[in-house]
Length: 260
Image 1: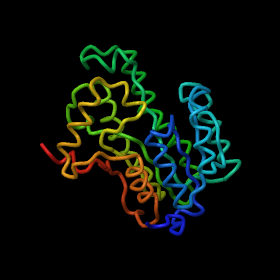
Image 2: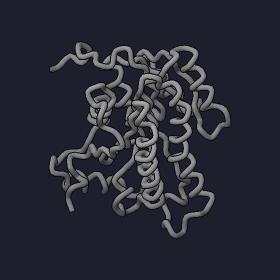
Image 3: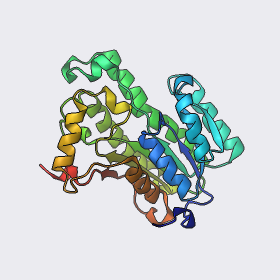
Image 4: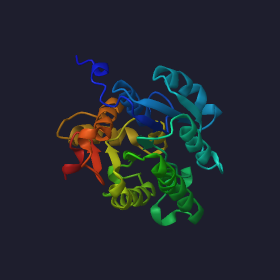
C-alpha cells in the first residue's frame, strides 16, 4: 500500500474545507486526502449541533483553523476569510460543499416549488459558492483551485432529485463562468459530481436506497463510489500537475453517467 505521507505534493498548500457534517460527508473525504498529501487545513462547522461530530475530525487532520460557518448568518463568511488572511496570508484550495432546499420543496414537484424555497436553495447551494470565490480570489495570489459539489441530476432528470436538479445546473454554469474569469490569475474552478453516496444531505431524498441500487447495477464499474474515492480525485485536481485543467464537471461515479 502506498504511503501517501511520502507523496506530500500539497505540502505548503493552504486548504479551506466547508460542509463537513460527520465522517460520512464528501467534504470529509476531501479533507482527509488534502491532509494526506501534505496540505494545511482550515475546517468549518455549521452549528453547535454539528460541531460535536466535527470536533474529532478536525483534530484528526490537525486543522490549523477551526471555526463556525453558517452562510445564512450575515458576516460569518467574511470572518472565516479574515481569519485565513491573518493566520496564513494566502489560500490555495477552497472546497464548497454546501447545499440545502426546504424539505417540502425538495420532495415535491419542480412545478410546485415555492418561490421562497427556490430562492433559498439557490442562495445556499449556488450563490454561496460565488460569495466564497469572491473572498478567496485576493488570497490566491499565486493561483489556486476552487471546488464545489454537484450531481448527475443537474443534467438528467433523476427521480426524487426535483428542485436540486435546476439548482445544481446553475452551479455548474457558475463553475464554467468563474473558471473563465479567474483563469488569467491561475485560479482553477471545478464542479465535482460523485455518484450517489449515503450522506446526511442525501437522507432528504425519497427512495434513496433504490437510487444506490440502480447506480451500482448500472455503472460500468459495478461499484459505488466512496468519500475516499472522491477525496483523492479532488486532491489530484488541486496539484500543480493539474494546473491546465479547469472549468470541468468531473464525474466520479464508476462511469454511471455514460450509460443510457
